[in-house]
Structure formats: structure tokens, C-alpha cells
Amino acid sequence: MPIAGFDIFLIGLVVLVILVFFAGVKTVPQGYNYTVERFGKYRKTLTPGLNFIIPFIDRIGHKLNMMEQVLDVPTQEVITRDNATVSADGVTFYQVLDAARAAYEVLGLQNAILNLTMTNIRSVMGSMDLDNLLSNRDEINAQILRVVDAAAEPWGIKITRIEIKDINPPRDLVDAMARQMKAEREKRAYILEAEGKRQSEILKAEGQKQSLILEAEGRRESAFRDAEAREREAEAEAKATQLVSAAIASGDVQAINYFVANKYVEAFKELATSRNQKTLILPMEATSLLGALSGIGAIAKEAFGEDGSSKRSSARIPNTSSDQGDENR
Image 1 (cartoon, rainbow, N blue to C red):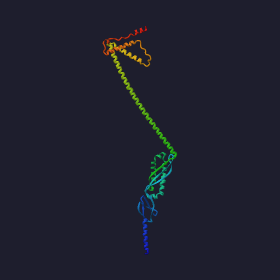
Image 2 (image 1 turned 45 degrees about the vertical axis):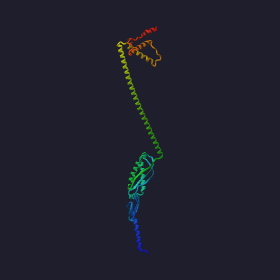
Image 3 (image 1 turned 135 degrees about the vertical axis):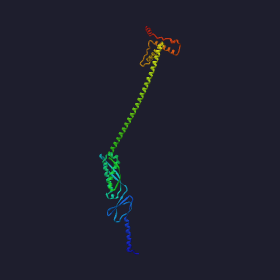
């Protein structure tokens, strides 16, 4: 059966409708936004999902990734405020918030963000000393992020993070810093050692102080005891002298003989035990010593209650002058 012209027209019309339908249906994947242009002018933004446009009049202008993206910042030379040259690189995290502005406000979005980040890295790091640069990396990141985010805001871009990865000073500068760190550590070690010696000397002095205090306390106690002993000895001697005096007053001659003989024996004992005494010479009146000893014996007999006749006997005191005369003759 031959196909008539009207049938061909219908088939062509159906095919055209199908083509027009598919040309006007656009599917946007998740995480992307498409811009729609009508006769070259921005008209609207297509969000993820199924969208419809006017075929052959509207067209897709730009396909933009709305997810957070990472941009590596290459290594660059930076001169610090104290004229030290360091190498620094980093990484930038950004996200497109407004597809229309990101597509039509700037040409070459990633290149613009990269150059903006590198410029501000040199600016911020160049305004700091090397020591601050190496020790305040978080502060550097915060300053660069604040400046770059403010500059990228007209492009519909949000700079979420900027991180400095490496800061590499020259080799000679690293060696100098190592020597400085070593000297600083040695200085702290010497200070700690000196502090330890100081504490040791303080504790030693405290110990000596306590020892001297205890020794002084001991000497004071010993002197007190010695004084007390001398006081009691003096009291005993005074009492003995009083008793002897009372005995003499009552007419007892043995008492004075005992007193004199006791002193005589004590003096003779000191003479015999003296270190400087090499030769001991007995006196001519040695018999008087015997008489004194007999007086002591008589007193002892009285004390132990021996016969009463010996109580009344008087000790004979030797006549030393007559003995000396006989000796001379």
C-alpha cells in the first residue's frame, strides 16, 4: 500500500513534536546549576531535577558545580618584614553560592580565585616577622581567609577555608634557628641547674642552722644542768661546813681534824694527778697526814658507834717544827 503525502506529513509532524519536546526538557544532576540564556541574555537558573525551557529560543549557558571545591595554591617566594625569604604554598576551599554571578561576573573563576589567594598570601605574610610567621599559622590563615572571602563575594563565591600547608625558610636560616634553639635550651638547662644548686645550698644552710640551734640548745641545757649541779654541790659543801662549824662550836675537835684532813687529801690528789707534774716530792710533815687520817678514822668510828672512849680522844697534831729541827740535827 503506497504511503500518501498526508501520511508523510503526519509522520514528520510527530517526529518534530518529539524532537521539540526533548529539546525543551533539561535534567540537571544533583550538585549542579545550569544558567539559561535567551538570545544570549541570562534569563534564569535551572536547579537539580527536571526542567523545561523553550526549544530553539532558550539554551544552556553555563554548567556550574555548586559543591565545595578544592584549589591547590602553588609554592611561591615571600619576603617577610625582617627581609627573610621563605617559600609557602597552601590550599583553598570555595563554594559557588550564586550561579549567575559566578558565571557572568568573572571570567575564569578558578584562575581568579587562585591569583587572589596568592596575592593575599604574599601581602599578609610579608607584613609579619619570621618568628611570628612560623608560630602564628592560624592567625595567617584567618587573615587571608577574611580578605579573600570579602574580595570574592561579588562573584557569588564563598571562601570556606584557606590553609597554609608548608612554610620553608632557606637552609642557612634553618641552621641558624637550630643553633639559636640549642643555645636557648642550654641556657634554660644552666638556669635550672643553678636553681637546683641554689635550692640545695638553701636546704643545706637550713640544715646547718637547725643543727647549730639544736647544738646551742644542748649547750644551754648542759650549762643549766652544770650550774644546777654546782649549786647543789655548793649547797652540800655549805651544809657540811655548817655542820663542822657547829661541831667545833660544841667542842668536838675531831670535826676540825676531819675538815683539815679532807682538804689536805684533795689538794694532794690534785697534785699527784696533774699532767705537768713529773716528780712527786712528799713533804717533811708526812706524819701529820697520818695524824689527819687517824682523825678521819676516829670520826668514822664515832659514826658507826664504836667504843665511847675513842670519841673523847683527840688526834695528835704532829709538831712539824720539832721534826724539822731533829732532821736538821
